[in-house]
Length: 188
Image (cartoon, rainbow, N blue to C red; front, side, top):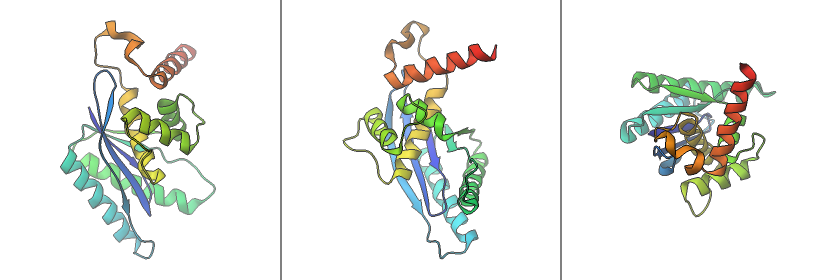
């Protein structure tokens, strides 16, 4: 599975593509940040982000797109910029018939680190470890985009044979799997 993760923002929009095998091993394909100057009119910034994401979708041909779910913050301006960048990302993904998965920051942190309240440094460190990188990707927007892509792929049921069980999972994947099972038991 190939997933494009998008950490939406108007000034810095992190984008990362990972390949994830049926045994849930992740490999870096691409990571970058789409930047737009704040002096540009809003419509031109949104257009630039859309074009950047569209180019990545066309070049890397992911099977899914993962976005950070917009959540309420005290800074309305930040929320609006995030929502606008998210909207354009959803638009270009939908144009190509791709499903979009929305994930909260705590879901992403739990998936990658095993702890839903992890800080950005812990997430970046685990992204580097999961992808076998020498150092965490920078800036944080790039690392967050990769974490979103990994989270999305790991949330899906594994394609490998059931006999493999939890033995082939990383500690973070096992923690995520256990948390999902516990939440399903509470719902029933």
